[in-house]
Length: 381
Image 1 (cartoon, rainbow, N blue to C red):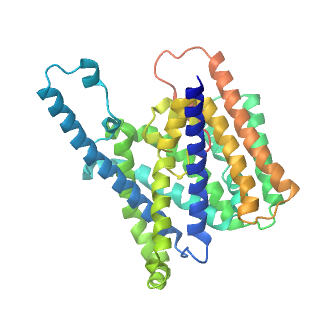
Image 2: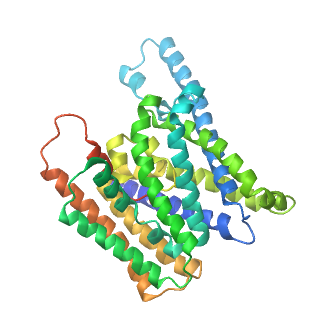
Image 3: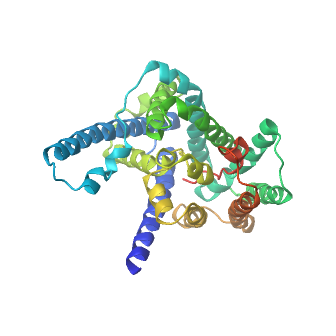
């Protein structure tokens, strides 16, 4: 039992470390005068390249392991059947292949994906880290709005109350933020909007890639790399040219870029490892942000989706509180209260939806679109 407790504690600690580090690293890359360049689209584009490269390499390694395992079993006729059938870690990774027809069908989701991660990083660039979670807190609000508009679904008074708490916390934080940025806050709201759209379109597009989240990740990031290029050329050409001989010749800059890209793959792509119901239930984050990941999945498997949500909420609170010290963000009473109001409302929403789904009659077929929309949780990166 103590061994299990130690394992769970280590998994949760790893999730907290990677998630918080991802946010802080991206903040450095987006706004630090010593390390960053004024080109958030380029930084995001590079992280997409890292993710696509990891997917490709993982697929190649998986193919080699699968072939080696097949050869070993074929040579050893007396091999233990249970061992032979036991899937390895690499079994989850498909061979990364890019087909134009499939890419075209994934393209609408990729456009939304680009909007999601772009506005997420723009939000992080312009707002204080302590205000970041508040600025991106409206995802569940947009989920319920889409549910109401598209599906004419019924919204309970308890759900409306939870959304009211989140919205109240959002405006409280905006009012209490000393270094308030309208550009950053609007980017956070748009990020929340695209996060909600991303979850809806992901469900629709998954059958195109045989319901394989790793394939979808590969296609999404390759498409995103192509979509970012013209935007970078138009909006950030001068900033990139100015970085030659400065940041581009700095080992610190490229080390931070590589680590942030790897952390983004780890924490951002959990939807690529877990089944749809769990993805719908926990929805990670950030991009992403934009990408929930290996450490998120480990935490879900070691605990439960509900415990993951509680851990994520506590992590977001610690992340915001640490920002006041590490980044020197000035704290106000309204600013601090808004963090706990927003996170408390989001967590309460989770319990309300769980209770409503528990009391609802069991579905006769597959989960409805209403459940797909309403069970979203905001991405936490």
